[in-house]
Image 1: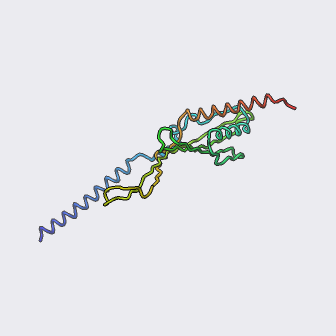
Image 2: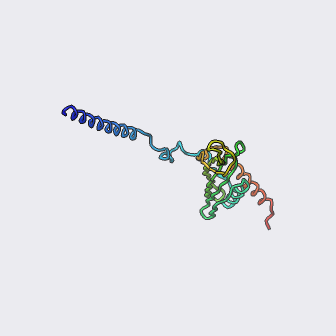
Image 3: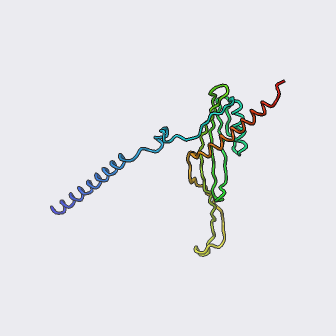
Length: 194
């Protein structure tokens, strides 16, 4: 009887030690982990390079050029607030390499006047890549041999979602906006004043 009581006591003691050691391991692992990535969102290392540019035209002309370029490039203008000079636009594109992938680019363009003849244009863009899968449900003969399809199931999975950091993306946009503003400036100067 005494031996059985000792075994029971040792078993309970080992169980308690096991739980305490598991708790300590979890505590150490939890306290030693890095802070979440989003906490550094405003650090200098997370700043998007090349996403703002000054254009030497009045804000009204820059506003029109930005709307024109976004529309020409196939962006759907979701919202354009002329009072606060903010444009929300997005574009969906199929991948040229893989027909099952699609890309969505969502852009926010903000304009503000630096002076009468200078406008600061800033762009923030995010991209999402989605995988579109199509699978068939089959009727099986003897639960083993698929004979013919009985249905189709479509699935969409987000593969990647991130901020657009490509300098080429922003330089192409600003190059097109500058070209448009220059063309408008030249056409306004060539029209004689009456």
